[in-house]
Length: 276
Length: 107
Image 1 (cartoon, helix red, strand yellow):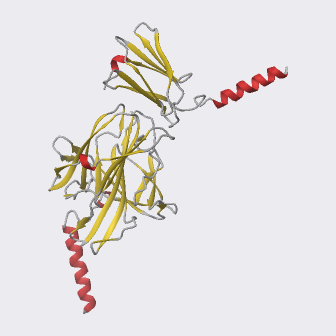
Image 2 (tube, each protein chain N blue to C red; image 1 turned 60 degrees about the vertical axis):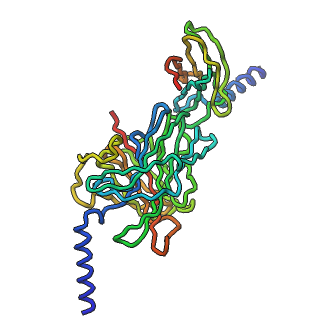
Image 3 (tube, each protein chain N blue to C red; image 1 turned 90 degrees about the vertical axis):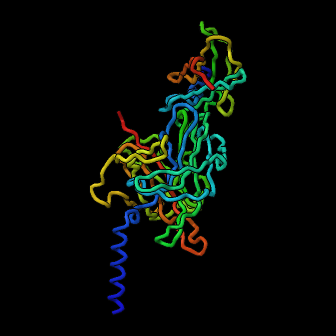
């Protein structure tokens, strides 16, 4: 009887999960800007949005980020320069296809050639259905002028993905290779979720376009899953041009926040560009 | 004979020590107008190697050399903005020469 009750409960929960549209999808913190490699410096326009990038149906409210900064470096031997960017964040409301969510906009003038590694440590987000927190520490490596710098260097974040392939020089079909680190150490067998930004982000209207770039042949293609090897290294070949998000789940050292479980994840965004 | 041999070896050593020689990298250089009457150029290579010591030549519209110098240890070179037309030449050896028209150097 007890057993039956449990089964019924599980089935009910499952049915609920299947009917709730956003629940089964992966959350992805985004640092979005249209271009990843710029010929020249200039003003870079960015959006910080917490969403499900493949479906773009639902965005979550972001709290005030704990950290937002960039580390600039020109050349392999150049001095890394860290700049705090939190003061430049301005709150906006981002329109997804089915709701709106609190997000941030940010503008930064970049001049010198080199790598600009942006890092965001967002406020922990309470997932109401799960009663647990998540904190997705997110990176984006932008290049100006083609001179590389620190794209392959860890920033010393609690959890992060360090690229092993230059993240701003990837053709469509290339593999992106990354290493998952927790407190600077590789995370063996880390679980990584992969999503494609399937609805163009419209910077003028702070919204996702209704039109999807691709249709998933089956739900299991919406969020792909890969695993890292014993050294925390993972490989993924990008089949389509555009932005790809990689999220290593629960790899960070902090497992609890305000008495509830927390998943501290490491994310990176890279852009694949067609070879023409 | 000995002296000749030594010279050959010295030249070979020099060639091997030249950073820009026979590598698959591309030379890169960007210049900005600092809006204070000076121009700063920043150089480098696509493999991340330094452009420190690479020569930078400033020429007037007629091709006459106005100024010549070398990039500093942060691969930068700053010079007084010339009156009228000018060109900047980033000269990092064979196949690594970049010419930038002053008209295209903006803030």
